[in-house]
Amino acid sequence: MATTKWVLDATHSEVLFKVRHLLISKITGQFQKFDASVETEGDDLGTARVSFTADVHSVSTNNEQRDAHLRNSDFFDVQKYAQLTFTADKLQKIDDEHYTITGTLTMHGISKQEALHVEYGGMVKDPWGNTRVGFTVTGKIDRKDYGISFGMVSETGGALLGYDVEIHVQAEFVKVVP
Image (cartoon, rainbow, N blue to C red; front, side, top):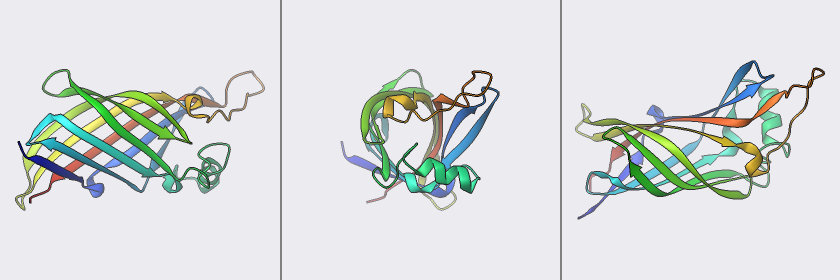
């Protein structure tokens, strides 16, 4: 069976994360520059090989002071670790709309196996004749596992910033026509 390549439509995709702040709310951030590619055997998504890269310099929380802090050595340390990557090792189908994707996440110079949930949004032909697929990817990682342990304690003893990072990705891909 022929290999099918799928390219990311970044204008219809987003990579978000959420971290608890003061144990009472969550701050949302995003990577504004990222790329992903998928290869399948024919249109069989169960055979997908996935790779993802984010430019860590592009982190944004809509607060320049906080973004500058996230870029320094307390967090992402973008001078040393400019990219975050995820390479899938396995895609396990749960049912027609749900999968678990397992792969290696490399962040802050540390690589670790992670499993994320994938919701398949469907496959359609767009008005220009292109075949598109959409996915929602969610999961949670512990930032301490990647050497990002900066934290402060409030005067009442509570953490100012959570260690669990929620991941929420919307991804739309376009089939490459040979």
